[in-house]
Image 1 (cartoon, rainbow, N blue to C red):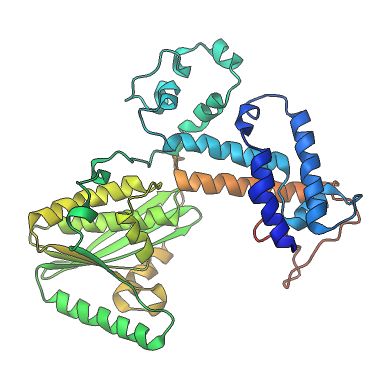
Image 2: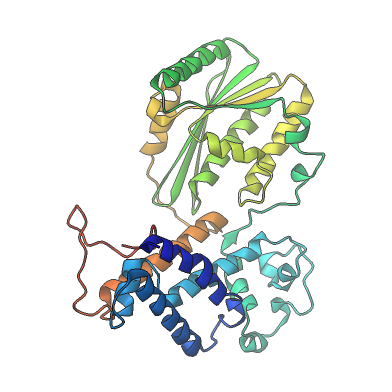
Length: 389
């Protein structure tokens, strides 16, 4: 086996078996020196085996070369992800009822919930539940798996499967791509002369953790409806779904519209609307599906089409929206909750940055460890993507 295969074997088999049930002993202020020492020895042996290094090689250095993050940081990452998983549970789950009332006041709390305990009693509890409760209010709830729009027999994808469609562009062949752009032109010209059609052009971008979402809605003999929204601490998928959601809401409020055509660079994000699997964007998709259900039920000829329009195509209508999303530069004034997906990414990035900082400042890699240089003459930082440095 080569280096990458050995590393994959360790991560996908050995590490998973070794850390199985780690939440039973890794939480709060429990002493961890002995288990971390044992796990550190296991990872050191694995790093030496993967790299084929000498047994006297420094652990910190060979782990960085192989791409194995320090075991204590890896456990911290897993623990923080476990704390996020409570948000994926149903509102009727027992763990939800054990949280403090401030986290979800609409639920009936258990008599032994953390909110019913005194401060002294809470300090005596050393369990993962306390860690979950401490970060519960930091994340915006986005899972609504029991929403009526996802119920069998009531789903848009079952009842109105013929009233929505997706049209993707071919980016590999120039002739097909040009033909697709010509289709967009013809569609825009034709729809602009039909009063029953609504054209929605959407785009979103993120700068400094601030998302800017813009949509332009064109309806015959009506002024262009322009919407602009800013949001912080979200991923691009949430921003893209939100702007599509706003555009559909504006179009469906017009009683004389029978066909909605959406031009977007995020066609695969738009497909999430009809994705019935469990995902962290259900709050957006449930709202969009509710709007579409009312729209399709109003008349059997009402339809919606999603057309892919890449920002690199420089199609005039989409280019105008794309430029505006890139031109805004705002500063958040107030702190707010994080979306689930963004919180997961942020915690992962914090752990990686901490590992890199410790690696650069620590003497554990020994003074003879050579810093590797990339093509720009910058020191390569540790990474566990694709097997390390």
